[in-house]
Amino acid sequence: MRDAVTSLIKNYDLTGRYLDRDAIDQLKSYFQTGTARVQAAAVINSNAAAIVKQAGSQLFAEIPELIRPGGNAYTTRRYAACLRDMDYYLRYATYAMVAGDTDVLDERVLQGLRETYNSLSVPIGPTVVGIGILQGIVREQIAAAGVPTGEYIDRPFDHLI
Ligand code: CYC
Image (cartoon, rainbow, N blue to C red; front, side, top):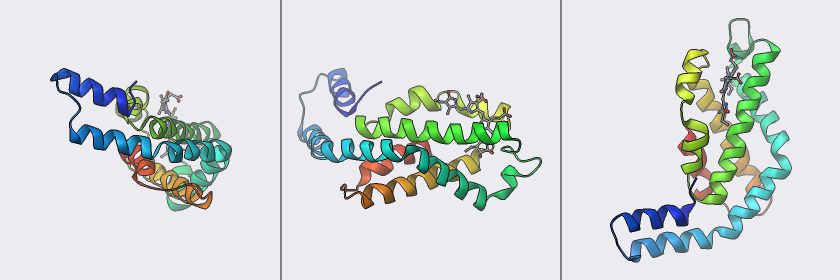
């Protein structure tokens, strides 16, 4: 698992380069957004359950077939699995936000996920819709808490999507 600094150093060390202007710009942006990223994580932490609940309701309102007989989130077991997955996406997106790097998502979430979903007939399209809904709610809540918003919020969700 890497963060923005370790990723950058890894890349520069591979080619034996000193940190050039481009690297310095990336580092500056990482440190300048540092406080906002940590505050955003705090906002998400104190609203996580409500965010997942709201995102689930919105997803099932947009795609009601999911919870009808034959839908992949039909039966309480699968409904719960779906909300649990949304909770995973939110939690890991928060880690990636703090790290300023999406590596944790590849390593802990996305690896092998497509195969798992395909074998269980979990539909990828609606999952992507669900992650987009989470993203919108998170963006709103962070803004409402008065924390500076920016690309740092979208990057982990866009990566999952
Ligand atoms: C199942 N989701 C699963 C399974 C895994 C994950 C491994 C199979 C095992 C299980 O049921 O627990 C996902 N596990 C993860 C992820 C991590 C992990 C991401 C990383 C931390 O450890 N169904 C829908 C919706 C969607 C959905 C569109 C919610 C957005 O219709 C999710 N995932 C869903 C459902 C199941 C599932 C319903 C159960 C499928 C089944 O057993 O038939």
